Structure formats: structure tokens, C-alpha cells
Length: 418
Image (tube, rainbow, N blue to C red):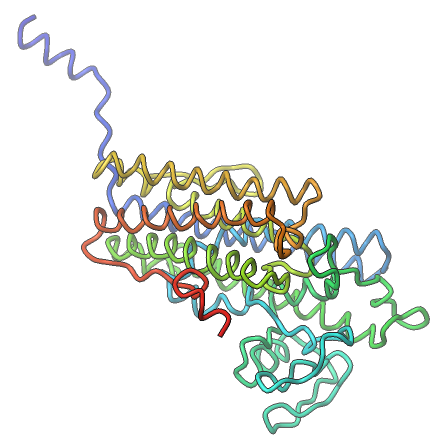
């Protein structure tokens, strides 16, 4: 074959794919961030529709529909948590929508076993719903009308106490389910729909104000999500922060993956509750939806790593990924990290499947429940192992180190009991 013929054949062949570049990878990351928060907003709007229908005609059926909408709203939001830790804009905002655990007595009535004010939190049993006026940090508060502004600007983290969670998904969760008084036995909160019946038939008093709070908290969640959708849209500040500096964007991606894997999920959300055998440490403790929260957190990590997100309408956002970058730079490490993430997600799926089959996460946390401990620790071990692989990827893909969020439950277990 002569040179001219060889050149002609080569010209006819498809061009070799370009190696993944940082700019393209970060663009995919930003696109996934925007789509995920946009889906969270869509599902929060669906939640509002269900809550409005429930409050218009309170019944077991309409309350169940509102609860179903809340659980559905958690699916995209939990997948967004991987955007925390590496993005200051997200970190500064996140506590408004997903802070936990909460001293629910700040908001509404609680069982007598809950107790009252503590040295750590003077407002742990304030019960805003029952009190249209009260003193907070030396100031008289007019709460005759419960508004998003009252919740977000006055009540949330009142007196600078983190447990005073007044807004976000978990405040709404408590208002729908009520306290889960089952301990480590099976069963979620069991708030009656009559807590929202105005006039005759109202249970536990203040049904009109309870409805006000639920409406205001839902409206506030939607406005908070609208803000974050804008941050990741074209021209948004969060997007620009990563796409304008792709190298720093890669650091943000790896920081979010590592910190969510290690300190946040493996430590604070999983091992800590197991060490304390305490269902109050469940992430979605009122609804017993924690198995889903854990799974979708893990899926969010996979989304960012593999550069692919399946939207709630079934469409897919995809593009160049960290996995592509790592495969170009160190194929052996890419195989290791991909395997670690796949393994962890499989372990989280085992927890999800067990809970959906009737072995609730509460029960898994019970002292002496060996099967539950094995399920949780297998996922914890997987998350820790994948973090170590993420840290090795940092040395290959960036010029420096990342700071991974820690947890005493992993780093200094004895400190947990001090």
C-alpha cells in the first residue's frame, strides 16, 4: 500500500476522541448541579400542591399524599448534597434547607418524654405554634402571623443554637409526621390529620397556626431552592466560580465527594447513630425515610464522578467526567475508584431494600441487632474505602491536597462518649 492510499484511508477514519479536559469536566459538573437543584425545586413545588390540597381538605388520604410528595422531593435534593463542602455558596445556604437534627419542641407540641428547655437550648420547647408572642434573646417577638420571614429570619437557628431548626425539609417532615415515638422499634411518626382540622375536630390545639407554619415553611423552601437554581444557571455565581477556574472546579468536585463520603455520611449520619443506638440521629427520623436519604447521597457522588445525572422526567444530563480524566491519567486508579463507588452504592442499596422490605433503619440501629449493624457498617466501610481512593485521585488530578470533612465517630470514637 503506497503512502497516498494510506493517507486517504486515514482521512476517511473517524477522528480519535480528544482526551477529557478539565474545562469540559467542570462544565458537566455545573450542568448536573443546575439540573439537580432544578429538579429539587420542581418536586418542592409538587409538595406545595399536595400540602395545599391537604390543608384545604384534611383527611388520612390527603395527608398520605402530602407525605408521599415529601419523600419524592427528597430524591433529587439528596443527590445535590455532593455539591456541598467544595462550594462556599452552597455551604452558606445548605443549613436553611437541610439542617438536622432539630429540637422539634421549638416548633410544635411534643410528647412529655421530650422534656423542656435545656442548658444548651433555652428554646427547645418554645412551641411557636402555640404562642403568638414570646421573648427571644431578650426581644419581644410578634408571631401572630407565621410567615416565611418569621421562620427564616427570626426562628431558624434562634439564639445561634444549631438545633433550633425552624425551616427546610425536616421542619416540614416533622409537621407532616410528628414525632417518631417508636424508639428502635418499627414505625414512623403518626401525627393525625385532625391536627390540621380548623374549628370543631381540631386535635392538639392551634390547628390554624399549624397550617400557617406548614404553608410558610413550604413557601420558604421553594424560595430557597429558587435561589440555588439561579446560582447554577448560566451566569450564576456558583457556576461561574467553578467554570472560570477549571482547576479549582476539579478541587471542588473532589472535596464534595470526599467530605460527603467520609465525615458527613459515613461518620455523622451513619456510624454515630449506630454507636449511640439512637434513632434521633437518623437523617429523616420522623418519616423513617433515612434509607432513601443515604442511598441518594451515594448516588449523587456517583453522578458527579461519572458525569451523568438522570432527571426526574427521565432525561439524562451527561458529559465529560472525572472518571474520564482519571482514566486518561491513571487507568489503574480509575478502575479502583470506580469499583469502590459501585461497591458502596450496592451496599447502600442493600440498606434501602431491607428497609423497604420491613426492616426499618430504626431497627438496624438497635443495640444488639447484629444484622442491622452489619448492613450499616458494610456501607460505612465502603464509604471510607471510597474516600481513600478519592484522596489518591486528588494527587493525580490536582496540584495539591483537599480538606476532607471529618467525624469523631470515625477519627476519635472515644470522644463521642465524653
